[in-house]
Length: 115
Length: 113
Image: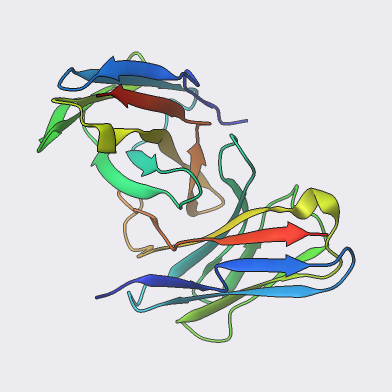
């Protein structure tokens, strides 16, 4: 089955210790997104890639970086995690070929804990 | 600032009843509207998408869209305890040639057996 996969599902890191979250997809979608979701809040878009074009949200902290080495994979790097970065990190993909009906599909998420 | 507003709930309905979830949005240019279901600790799962005014039915779910009133709703008929979850309304908008989606904070639905 075509899907969006995130690894690891749970990540524990220490304050200030870099961490990398992984997302892969077998849907062959052009667009990949990273969201941060904290408890009882809406998912917040951090950035997205349309193919190789990187688009950063204006309010995404510099502490968050992303890489997309190929169509299938996208990584979220948190250079120096703070306690406030503890959250669920969601990867989503979409075809990106229709301006008005583009639909995002989510992976299972990675729950990040910062000690 | 694109806004999507939802009542946070919880909305409690008895099993077998109709649950009605509502959402309003600020961007008149929005063209696509989505409902996602999110179980506690899980990721959002697409339930319905709607693009035109009126109703769209899929099984027990009906999405309703009124662009003039900037209002979209989700009806769940014959509600089941397994429907207990947070329902996120999502609305698309154009930014710099790309399509983005703004999510509401969600309405928590509790179906009482």
